Length: 346
Image 1 (tube, rainbow, N blue to C red):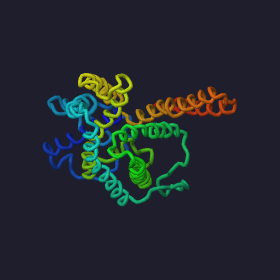
Image 2 (image 1 turned 135 degrees about the vertical axis):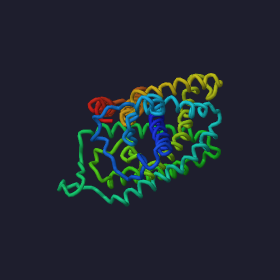
Image 3 (image 1 turned 45 degrees about the vertical axis):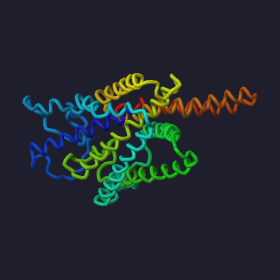
Image 4 (image 1 turned 90 degrees about the vertical axis):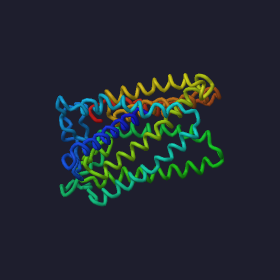
């Protein structure tokens, strides 16, 4: 949820800023461009609230009211509350799933967008380090960043249980989930692997939000931001519903105890999202830390402990079993601790 809020803030800021610049400075800063950016080269530049990897704005003067009011980190996270909060208080999960289905078009466009860019760039991979193309390192000391993200990817699968719980025909859950996972895999391969293989600059330049690598004047990238903003605006209420379902059912035995309960919970959650968007707007850091922590608890530790307790109650617990499962827990702990060694990587 925090990552979605940070991304929606970023997309909303850039979409509105792009429209403003087109209206007030047509043919100037917004002339068409397909430039590929490497924010890594300008990472030393201070962030004044208006600068992001994908939309570099001129420093506003004292009379520029728009750029003082519309700042990516300082004000836009609060404006986003007005657009999103009313959608979070609905009771029916059917509304969320149907509303979320509208976001599918953004996924299709993103796949087309990456495919078009890849066809323009070609493949840029050099595993032999000859210097003829973009060098690719087969192994890196930064691998704990990937394992932290993978832990979250595995942990988030529990959301499927909450979504499928309200299926009209639960006997089709296996079929539907299989189709869903295949579609997700194909999307990830195209957007992730194809973009990485075709990216024409140093692979370290690739941002945690790949649209940061495109100029704000790139028309295709601008449309992609609009589509993704719309998709996240439709998915975000569903994420809140899943959390609300689990939280309220655990504490009150009901998924919707009252509107007041729901509003208070939503205010707290939105407040947390706004704080992160204001003070830590780095989705890579948020994903890997939350993934490593949740993975430590729900993937590595709790399943092993529950299994060991059941073996002990049955009188079948042996020391080799305890050592193996203890090692698994240590792997989860090492994954979480490893995130702190790369605090400068976002």
